[in-house]
Amino acid sequence: MKIAQVAPLWELVPPATYGGTELVVHLLTEEMVRLGHEVTLFAAKGSQTSARLIESCPAALRAMEGEHKEDKTHCNVIAYEMGMVGDVLKRARNGEFDIIHNHMGFQFLPFADLVDVPVVTTLHNALAPARIKELFLDNRQLPYISISDYQQVLWPELNYAGTIHHGINLSKFDPCFEVSNKDYFAFLGRLSPEKGPHSAIKIAKAVGKKIILAGKIDRVDKAYYEKEIEPLVDGDQVQYIGELNHEQKVEFLRNAALTLCPIEWAEPFGLVLIESMACGTPVLALKDGSIPEIIEQNVTGYIGTTIDELIEVARDYRRFDRKTVRTVTEQRFSVERMTQQHLELYDDAIKQMRLVKASDSKVEFKNHANLRRNTMANSMSLAGYRKLDAMGVSPTSTRHSTNTASTVVSVGTAKSLVKASILKKDDIKLGQNLGSTVPLSP
Image 1 (cartoon, rainbow, N blue to C red):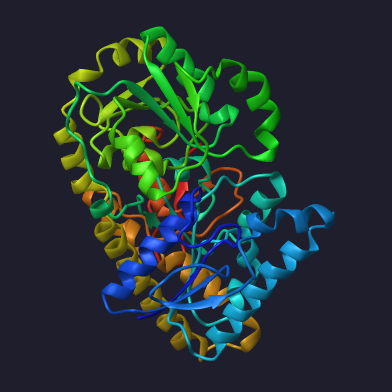
Image 2: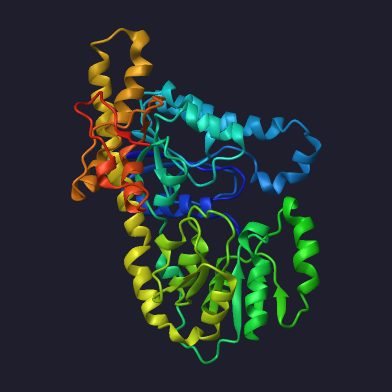
């Protein structure tokens, strides 16, 4: 298979320190190359890969922040990103790819219909601010990959090809199963209000345990850090050690008694959770977003509804079997599993595009875009059909409608709504043919 992986340009692939999206792109790319696929990676100069690398800007955009500060209209950033999109499209039209995987986000969406190659987009980030969400909704018919079922509940209007949880290269995480010598709790992530480092400090202090904070401080979070976190950092019980590379991160996590993730927002996934679990270190988190899809309660960690609840569990951190934490992570979050699921989804997308091309010869050219949109929206739910069939639910379309009497969502979304107990199977009215819709009673 000839695959284009289109990465964001803000960090290198793989990232030197922070950069969950870029790490996932790297892992997918390397595993697909290992399996014999012909992969082209579009990324910033300095990225490292065994695939063919197309350098789309002279350095990671975050490393060029000084240049961006002088550019008040952000024209340089836009120029680099649009230049990469144009390059991908030209190469696709020349037959270099069977499929394009968009990881950069909204920037690619308006151009996806310009090539006769399927373009799948992974939702790595929130659909915000409002104008970005509008772009996604304007292109809702394109196939999207959610990284958690919770994402499909948040944004049910989109056409989901399926949910694929992230995976990691477990061979690069050396677990530690000793418990007695663990003298600190770990917090790893952006030091921002929604990530909850202030709550992590509160938990550690209540338990009488040292806490070490690691991660980056964005410009937008600097005032929060200086007001809420920095006064608590004493270099003893509360320490901040900055950003970590991979080797430092593994040592940091494997030697921690617990990893604390008291998030205060709807986290779409959370790589740090599975990285910690890969080290054998259980995770304590608040119940929000995708957290219940990642942590197995009282096995790989604990999901609480309040900080006080997490404090009580943290006092008894030795209750968790660190070997079991690692074993469950191997079973659920390997890079091999993640890659295989992507390849199966790619294969479905390519087969459906062939149907589009075959149908296109029977209609006028002016109808091509609508034909492609409708066929892809209907066909990309095949993975969802299989999942829903096992539940006894078999909707046959994912086309969106603005009918005020009902809400029309993708089959992937329908499956997530049922799984989350937001809807019952009886609430789903099944379509009658390929052109019908899947209305969900309000």
